[in-house]
Length: 392
Image: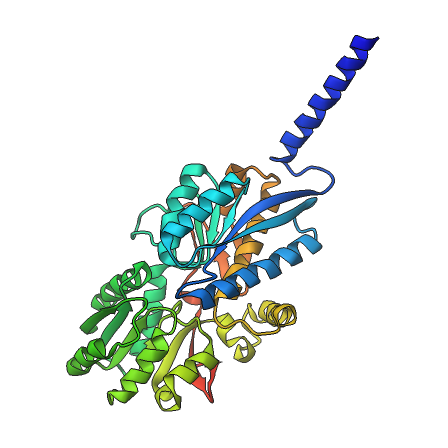
């Protein structure tokens, strides 16, 4: 009898262990908490992006959990600061994976996204980043690395098209951050310009932390382009606009899609009112949500998400980052639900079949394309009375 009781207890314990193990890989009855990493630049030169991304992702996760979007599963984010630094990104990713995360949202920067791509693929943990995923033309993306941003070639083409629409421009100058993002978009811009027969008369680089771009702008002024395209985040686009005006340069300044992250109010304050009339921005829909046409498929989603963000945090998002992270969380939840499993391999396979209408774009992934947004997701915008509005 005693042996039988002991055997019964042992079998019960083994059964419990089996259920726990099975529950870690399959969606089971009841509620289970599942860890995911949430990496964003909460400090450093792009903290304005990262804070919005963290808050956008948390808003989505709260909605996902309350609505039981993944039946029986509650997502629990492990939030870490990637500091806008790829080394810190890799360390943070290793930390959340070691803590049992089955997937990762973030990081913020292109350099961080590139660094994390190899880790995610080696550890077979899906990562849906907020930064650009730099992949060479016609190359296969890293298997477990995805981006809720735009393909570099699509962003470059959108920027170029906006520049060429200004006063029938025939020549351009490029001023770009020397980081991975700036270099990637700059290289694609030059290829696109050559294909369209547009002359690139100057190409000047600056550092992410630069505050004085007058040497680069002086060289560009001498080249006398019809339009100037800026590629770089933080406060540098606004400083470039201001310093252009101070140098007597009145060419259209096109701010590239992912560069505008500090928000229109802060941009207008830094640039100054005199510099704003020549500024155009290749924007994501979130940045002009309240002037977006009702016919746009993102209109309803944005008119639900932005007020919810405002209610939760007492402010509007300052750039595209909140929407990128919000969509990334929903895309991941959608993939887990469709996979019917918490197995990272099955989640990865489901991500490869993603087609999800988000606030930024119709997110589309395939085995050969892991960047969600494309050129058709961009709109042209300008600053009117200190506010970014839809249209040229």
